[in-house]
Image (cartoon, rainbow, N blue to C red; front, side):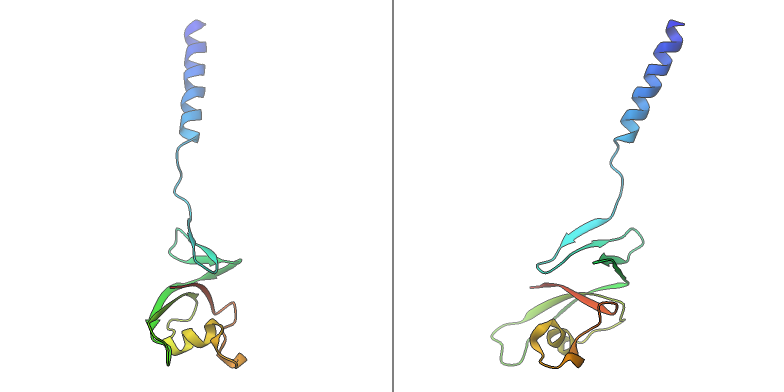
Length: 109
């Protein structure tokens, strides 16, 4: 009977230790504008939307003193630098902005 109790207690202890093991989860990233997560399947999640791609788009805005980098999560396969800077809030035309389902700006460097 004593061995049985020791075995049961050992099993309970082992299961508790196994339950505390670190699980591979989503990798959270904090951009300067939005927090997003890289999911285990290689997609990205932000504000309840799932995106296929993460782009770091660099270049120089006209008349700027230095280069800028825009980090977008996107379902579009490509975003040009001109699209990126205009959609970042610098365009006065609503036609230059992305819908939230297409792309979202998460960081500016």
